[in-house]
Length: 143
Image (cartoon, rainbow, N blue to C red; front, side, top):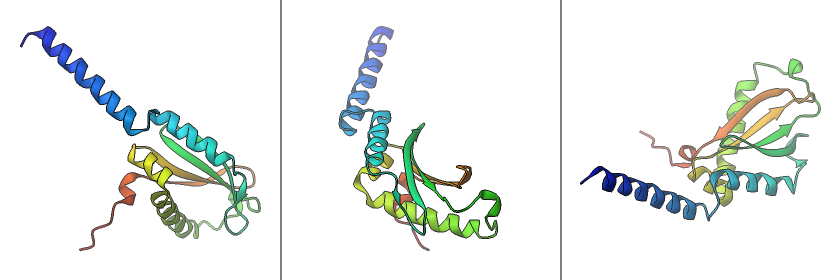
């Protein structure tokens, strides 16, 4: 096979892969799908979350759909730092459960995006961030 035929074959292979990916995302690029998901989420935001927390705003950061969770009654400096790891683990589990159960978010995860939540204090300072990936949705093997 000559170089021209090899190059033409590679170009065709890349083009077919691009079309298949385009079809897999419903004709929408990954970035467009994330933007569309953020815009759709923002139609219902802000809204209450739990215990006075508020789902405030959804946005796209790179390959991540990020929802900000605002905590209006506390400042980062006032938080009990010893409780943060436990809260982080609980919220991580809740995020994984909800992202894996929601068909739209699961589709984003399958397309290699992440679904994340940022927890912000009353001054909008970052307390912590969590994220879910497609791997989180796979059943865990217990030995």
